[in-house]
Every structure is written in structure tokens, then in C-alpha cells.
Length: 185
Length: 271
Image 1 (tube, each protein chain N blue to C red):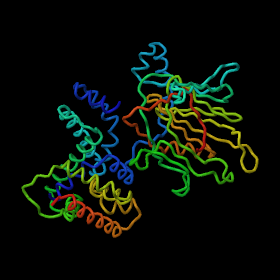
Image 2: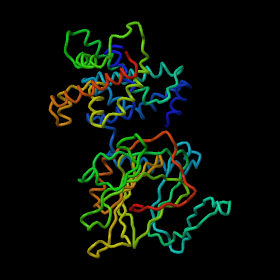
Image 3: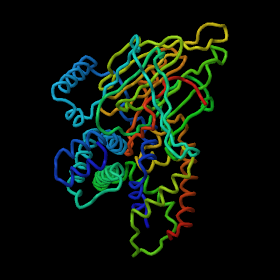
Image 4: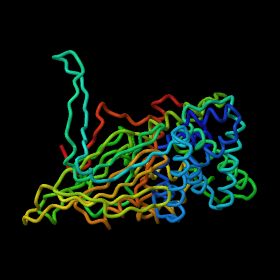
């Protein structure tokens, strides 16, 4: 079923919407959840939560691209779980490490009162990522979208962790420069 | 902005970038694999029986398509039609093509929308990345194609193409014809919900040693969606099946476009 058909089911409050969503996007969202959460049960629960959030938010929302909307819901739910866990134990885990690394890309303290729309920043990130070479892009997305540990990335790519760290460091520097040029001060 | 906001903004990344990274991590889409073939054969036959009882209305509701692979019958008239606008005559012109000498044809029935599909090879025979002859996909859709032609078959001195992968559609009422000295279906089976037909064709052309050039095809047909992907070439069936099993296929939002022709050609070649 195409996205327009699935959205129509949501708007009609027809529960077939959930079945169609699961059939079309279940594998994709599960891959996001499994990538971020090591526990398969947690991942499965996050995907189910994503379907519930989709049901609760559509309508009134009418996402332009359903795959992007569901992917975002899933990832945000997974990050919330990770943040809860990080708050409960001190240190450890990929989330604090990823945040530390991404802090290098933040151009400057800027206006602490300014609320930047995540969507605008997301669009900028898409422009940045589209310009990267495929391998560089895959690594960057694995590390900061899926929060994949360097050890896992090293196993997948066959590159040493030190090589991966250098590559990611260079990409973060480029991101910082890009964000500065985009006016994110 | 702080690192938390930046991390959150990654959720807005385009699906293409996310899927590409997911593939690197091994979280790949469901591949086409054999799953409970006996159950699926029964299911397809049962649905065909339901359709026969309930008629075309149900076919539309279920969106089911059929592919009939056969040799033209003795004395059967088979004519293909191609309509185009002639600017000199300022009118539409229809050309006809006689298809009766085709050794094998494919014909389709069904109703419902057919969406355009793209494929991403999960495995290909050894060869350099740059060895492909031609490949086409949507701009920006890295690794996804609707047409992919490999290198020439070196075993045959460059005659023949090792494999060519193409997206095709089961437009009802259309005929797909083949040419060559002969062509016949050698195997049919089901891989889960997909129907597989394997065809062996003896080409008009010869290999370097003068022996006939044999092309093999693995057609992967989705009767629910109305697309079929042809993997054809001079490679053996084991290789073509391996390519087929490891393909990822994704359905696009836009509908597949039928041209102003009611016949298409199934073969392997470029240009």
C-alpha cells in the first residue's frame, strides 16, 4: 500500500493503518532500534511505541514522507530510553561518548535563549551528509545516528579504531565549519 | 545549539543515508529467500481459484497479477502495436510488429496499481566495481538501480554479457517476446511470495569458438505487486539465482509507466 493509502487509514482511524505500517516499515524501524539499543526486547518495545505514537499523532499530523516520520519517531524513542539509562548509571554507554564528540561540532556558545528548530538543523545536516563520500557518510551516520561503538565499526569495516577515530574527527571538523557557514553560531 | 540538539537533529536524516548505514551494520531489508515454498504455492493457487469464482472485481481489490510464460501456438496470430506521434504527419501513427516467430512469450493479466520498483544488489559475481557496462538509477539514490549491466563474459572471449538486471512490469494485455533460435522455460518455483521462472535461450549469435551463445534468465515475479525483475546473461543458473536471492527490492511511491506500446522485448544487450 502506498503512503497516501496508509495515511488515509490513519485519518479514518482504521486500525489497519498499524498493520500496513508494520508491513511496510517494520523492518526499517526495527533496524534503527536494533542499531541503537543492544537489547532486542527494548528494540521491539521501541518499535511498538513508535506505532502507538504514530497512531496518536496522525491526525492531526500528515507527514510528507512517512518513512522519515516513522524513522524519526523510532530513533527519538530509542534515544529517550538511552538517556533514561544514562541518568540512572554514572558514565559509560555510547550516548555520553557521542555527545562529547558532537560537542566539538557546536560552533560556539551562541545565544543560549535561542531555540533552533530541530527540523531546520536536520535539513542542514542532510545537506552536509549528502556531500560526504559514501564511506565517510556511512561511518558518520553509523556513529551519530545509530550510536554504534567504534569497536563494532572496526569489526564491520576492517579498519582500526584509530583510523576510524581520525576519519570521524575530520568529518566533525568539517561539520563544525559547515554549521558556522550556515550561520549556526 | 548544544550537542544534545545536534544529536536529536540526526533523527531528521534522509532515509537513504540511514538505510545505507544500516546496511553497513548488517541491518538489511528482508532479502528474497526461499521461505516455506510449498505453503506459498498453495496460497497462490488458492487465490487464483478465488479469483476465478469471484471475477475481476476481486482481482482489482486484491491487486493480483498473473504471468503466463508459453510458446506461441501453431497458427496463433500475435501482433505487437506501437503508437507514436509523427510530427510530419501531425497525427498518431501505429506500427505493428509480428511476434508469431518468438520462441517464447510472456503475457499478463490483472488489475490494480503497479508501483515502480528499484533493486540493490546484495551479491554480485567477482569483478571490479568499474567493470559494469551500464547502470541506471534515480539521481541521488546511491546503490539503487532499475537497470544494471555487468561486464562482458570473458570466458566467451567478450561475446555475451555475464548478467543484466532489469526492473519490468506486468502490464495487463502486454506481450513480452523473446527472439533467438530457441527459448524455453526450464524451471518454475516459489520463493516465499515470489514466483520464479527460469528460461534458457539459444541466441542467434555465436561465442568466439563458434558454439551457440546461451542466455539464461531468472525472472522474479511478485504477483501481488505486478513487478518482475529479470536477471539474464551468459552466467550459469546458480550464479543468476544467487544474484536474485540477494537482491533487495523496494517499491517507490510513483506508479510504473506503461508506454504506448503493447509489446516489450526480453533479452540481454546494450544500446
